[in-house]
Amino acid sequence: ARIRRYKWEVKYEYKSPDCYKKLVITINGKSPGPTILAQEGDTVIVEVTNKLLLENLAIHWHGIRQIGTPWSDGTEGVTQCPVVPGDTFKYEFKVDRAGTYLYHAHYGMQRESGLYGSIRVSVRDNFTEPFAYDYDRSIILTDWYHKSTNEQATGLSSKPFVWVGEPQSLLIQGKGKFNCSSSSLTADTCNTSNPECSPYAITVIPRKTYRLRVASLTALSALSFQIEGHNMTVVEADGHYVEPFVVKNLFIYSGETYSVLIKADQDPSRNYWMTTNVVSRTPVNTSEGLGFLNYYPNHPRRSPPTVAPAGPIWNDTAPRLNQSLAIKAHHDFIVTPPTTSDRVIVFLNTQNEINGYRRWSVNNVSFTLPHTPYLIALKKKLHYVFSQTPPPEGYDFVNYNIYVQNPNATTTSNAIYRLGFNTTVDIILQNANTMLPSNSETHPWHLHGHDFWVLGYGEGKFDMNKDPKKYNLLNPIMKNTVPLHPYGWTALRFKADNPGAWLFHCHIDSHFYMGMGVVFEEGINKVGELPSSIMGCGETKGFGKP
Ligand code: C2O
Ligand code: CU
Image (tube, protein in one colour):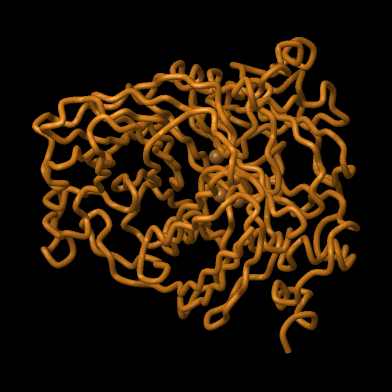
């Protein structure tokens, strides 16, 4: 095993990812940042210097479980104090499993300013993957706003509430195309001939097979991704091998990663469109994401001779639920889940108002982060820094109507769920109506520090007596991010076997910011000595740097 060292400088720079010029957070001058390439078993060391001048930061290694290094998870308020301007912070962790992962900012809503990138962990020497390909490529899909993240966050926490709205465009590997003529913008602010926003192109050699690692880090949007004239065979999801299945549209939610195989077997005299569209929300003026599948030796900037194909119908939930249901563990790589669980926690997802402030809640509790990170507070037994009243394990299953707006009184809390070490925990995510009549959203839930088995999805209200009988205990896929579909439920199981404090939250930036998350603690007494570099804020001021 090797050590992979990176030195990153994080700063604001003017960039035009979708032809519109704005301040973007870059790593060593780039957004998306550099791809971390490593092999299973390697140690990754990233030294990050915060040159944002006026803003803190923290970077999370999404999908890396941080076994034995919970302090390197990069979750501000949960596992560390923020890295203040001028400081350098060292992340060090082991990539213990091959697969496709991500990194991104985990401080407020900073991720959507452009601080993100890919982690690609290759397999051990002499290990054969259950599929073959000639070349390996990665892309990240994001949505993009022209308003600054600070302005968006301020609006979300204002009274009256100012919603961020739909994104202006979708980016494929940091490139998109906003229609500059749609508003009165000067050529200096918005210029569609700026090479910075030329479509992202993946060059392929005719007849070769490509493994395309597709990830989503959208702030809000659920996406569909497609390549004109090419089918995609799904072979990996969140670092786990999938029993292969073929799709034309790949539905992907924020925080998910997939590997798909594509064969360059079409007419090689031209290029093809890669497109991404918003699904599950009314697409109001969001420019679709466009890229090229460039057949060598055609010019990578040459537009395909066709009109970019339209994506699937945005409000058709059935094909998305079907894709979720189609994802099973590859038959040679099944990790069987424990057949029973020690604890079942149901999480009702609702949108509410608290004292006139718009919030998202889980079991009518809207989450807030304490000033002292949980990991430190728990380890040092600073129990006064967060609420010690355990949060609810469920909601009123009998009387609650998930199809209407939530009339319940909601509170904010920073209390956490304490799990018995090595116990098996089931989580049932239950969707419901938002504050709009006849409206329910898609929420991608992401768990830090673990992978979970996806035991099932269903429509309507989860039935404690009937639905567990339908769980897939034979070949469930393991993932770290999973969608909760509108008015539906999703059932997960995981082993609380990784000592630390771990966030579990909706991966939509604004939803987590508005309280849609919880924290789990397990085996805190087994956590090794905490590095002093994670301290310095809240009640840990004296513990940190001098
Ligand atoms: Cu990718 Cu807590 O997030
Ligand atoms: Cu959400």
